[in-house]
Length: 209
Image (cartoon, rainbow, N blue to C red; front, top):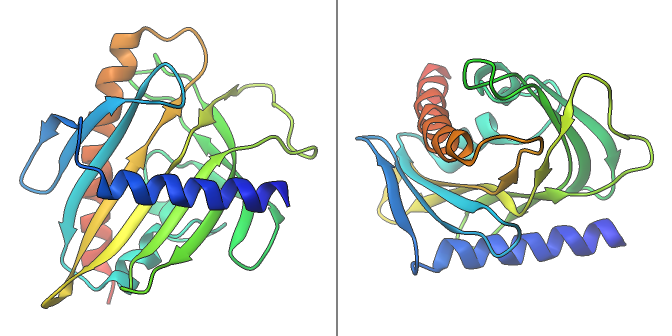
């Protein structure tokens, strides 16, 4: 029950993030994506929001984004090295472990994250992933990885009214990477990483038949 409650709370939080336009500051912008940030209310760091349009229907985009072991995302998302199912709580809620590679020219060492993830679909056709960190008895910290903490984060694949072949993708990252990383490294990593995330997503969706 605890996992379900946490997952549902995260979904509420992310839905409010997607509707609340106040306080966001643009930190990176390209033709494909706008990345904004504002101070997090969850931890002493920032919450980052990415916005971009992908030329495909939400279901097709979701196939590339959905969190599942051996799914498409592990193959294209450069920040996901491994994705493991720890416990299937309900049909739509699971506890998973994500392993990330080293980044920022090795300054950021490999991390792992244990999250409860809720997949939720809204009446307007928006498909979402909603995640936050949890502790699980069968997944204690492992040697070789710094245990990071994801605060409410996830992705939204929203249909665009009148444009059935396009999807508005919102991505929210709110991550405590752990370790003694300089703030400047963290603040530069996320905007660049999110821009790459959208670029790679666009390429893989285009490659699907």
